[in-house]
Length: 417
Image 1 (cartoon, rainbow, N blue to C red):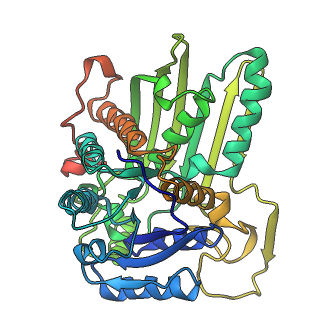
Image 2: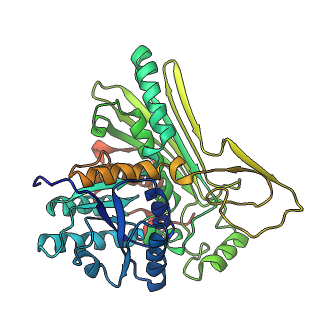
Image 3: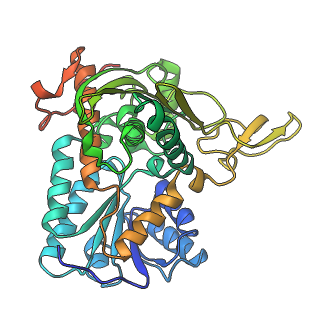
């Protein structure tokens, strides 16, 4: 890759205009030397609304574009954030690579939301395309940039591991009541169910915590995977009907369910042959105040713990307080009354702010960030190994299993819950 000059300001184009795009806008308010100059998504009203929001937040000047090609060739962006649905990401990357290779686009960098793709084969092609185009690339895994996770890892490795030995077990779980948009619920579009949607967070934050500081993530080698998946809540007739009413007729969990619960165990080895493990559970069937993320790291004589619902701020609202439904207290909020935890800065607490700060600074300086498409491929390998275990009912050993062309039963439409 040719050496790149440092830019005074990184101009970002948002490819996608849904829930996560608005989260990134909120995070970018706390990032220096950046502007959001362009938005593209297939729905005109949505892209116009996101561009208007960027301008309202004084992150622009930002314009909405009618096509991906128009945005990429307008010479108004230095980097793009790929934020569209999972089934569109590979086609988007192919278009980017083609326009950059032909000289029609002056783009220098691409960042992609989690997961990088729907399958390991797709993820590897994403990496191949971005490298062939000579682009800087970042994998947007926000939990790795959570301030609690970073601070906890620093203390554990500096004080605990230095004295009694490396950590050997990371646990990570994420639960809420279900996604916002219909495509998340459709296995063929999303690539799976809750395992694909949320365990991508859990396995990567766990792998990050278990990796010795100063060493590459590849210093941990994936050995085996075992998993169980099920549809515990949303295939019950009354909930399947409710889901169909909320999301439309294309989401039919009596006929084509995706899993709403997943539990997985990964075994890895470090360079010295030490065995370490990741335990993860994820669910769309959780009923509580809202999104709950729990993370633990355990070693010989120490432990760390993160719980996003263990907030400093709580608000109590009695039955006499009536209000409309919303998510002004916590993401995926399930109630408007009672004792409610409040996340006063969701973008910061979840890691979106520091994630964007890191990506912007790296891309602006012409450097590769710490979380790249290589990590996105590694995550997809872990997820596909877990799905393969769930599909076959056995432990999957990576040395004996080729996952290159593997597609989970949920994505093939043959999973029955």
